[in-house]
Length: 388
Ligand SMILES: Nc1ncnc2c1ncn2[C@@H]1O[C@H](COP(=O)(O)OP(=O)(O)OP(=O)(O)O)[C@@H](O)[C@H]1O
Ligand SMILES: [Mg+2]
Image (tube, rainbow, N blue to C red; front, side):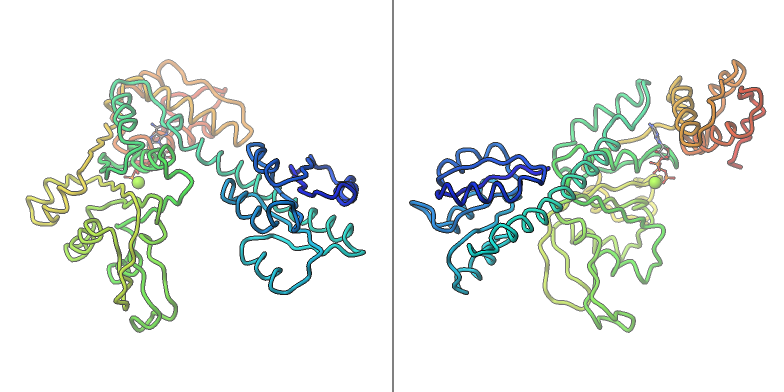
């Protein structure tokens, strides 16, 4: 169902249009002049049908005014005028359809509305999905009540709406990527791209073109132009994971990109201005890397603008049980299994264990135990630790 405005000063035509789409299930409102229509834009119509010859303002003008108020509104122009110039002008300025008032008006109008309504439906579905993705990555996905994790959440709230660069540190499996996503999806950039690049996973000779892109023919294998990750992340967030793995050469390039906020594709001499927020993560001790000459000091100071350190699971007290129960219930729900209990011995064992693989290890261990356990109870024996 779409919300449709019909702007038409001729009451007979208005009634005809309304009638032609009566069998489709829409909410229709009729206005006889432009002012009235604009005054009601707060109702967020999906589709606006505009008569070309309105008193006081022509249809194309009104179209431009309503699109200024709501760029997503789709406009159909209905007109007795058939000159090519007017039609081209209408489409160029953003009309979704242009219908001539002739004997097929009713059928054409019904058709146009049907098509656009399908569009509206899709758009609404995408919107719902997008909101779901955003919800999933909000802070509620970061579980824990320990002082250690609450401190992290507090820090996150301080920087979520700013563009400040954030460096996330912590051992493997402590949730660095989860935190990076939560920062993005809580920021003003939530509806723009979140682009992850794992610096440890890209072969050295490809990494520059991966980050900055290249033009066709820039090097032997460059058969097509390629957009780099920084460009992809424009208006959004770029997450550079394992930043400690970057070569010194690449570090100096990155430094320049961060200072100038622009990139140059390989094989091009044109710079492209970008607006991105960078979040970086590492499980290395970067200060140490600087001391050993493996990481540029100037880059280090630049990216450490704001440091969020994720404590190892071992330092999060009872959180281990809370996390375990959550992973367990998620897993059992997804696999349609009944949810086993954690025995008392299991709980005290889990509280004492060091969890070198942190939350990732906990998750793997719990899921495995859920499958292995008998009598609907997880015993310490079921926790066959996956890490070495
Ligand atoms: N506080 C938390 N609450 C719920 N799930 C968490 C939490 N922290 C981490 N996880 C989960 O643990 C797993 C590992 O997290 P993530 O991939 O973010 O870790 P990482 O620090 O990036 O690890 P690595 O350094 O190995 O890349 C993911 O499945 C993540 O969803
Ligand atoms: Mg990670």
